[in-house]
Length: 199
View 1: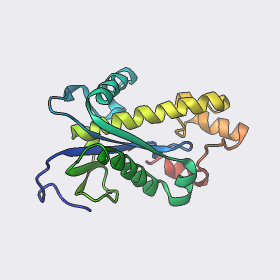
View 2 (view 1 turned 135 degrees about the vertical axis):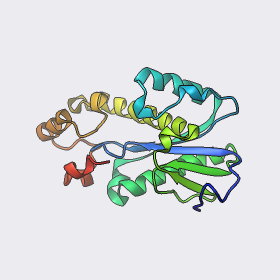
View 3 (view 1 turned 180 degrees about the horizontal axis):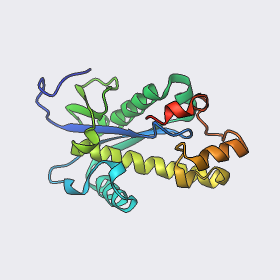
């Protein structure tokens, strides 16, 4: 259900964001977060603008104080339904996990598309730099995806996933050229890698 900021009384806000739209490998991960009153929002920000230490400290506080959940959608599903639909699916799954624990009144998501959820949902462009709940979700999604890619690096160290997290860096492209696609390669991305870097 889609709505606008002017149609509703916000009530309990749940924010959602994803991490991993642009990589050539690995899952896309989304998080959903309801922040409690008095949460120290000054420690939040767009996950891409924070240092790793800042993200980790903020993530620890969010996990301790907030109602939250993460959800991952695999590279196989990304290849089957495309990255946009996979991102929206991940956000819906994360929202559903939060909604099982709390009762959000509205879901605010980063970007310009909304997942299919049964409550009012508003897409906010650059929401991860504007809305604390989306900032918190951005941080959790980024931390969880980085954790998953670090685990992938242990299984397939030749691809360097711990360093580039699957993004299309020269080192990653060189590893693919040398070793072939990894077991978590997004095969639908391999055909048009330059285009995918725009995400």
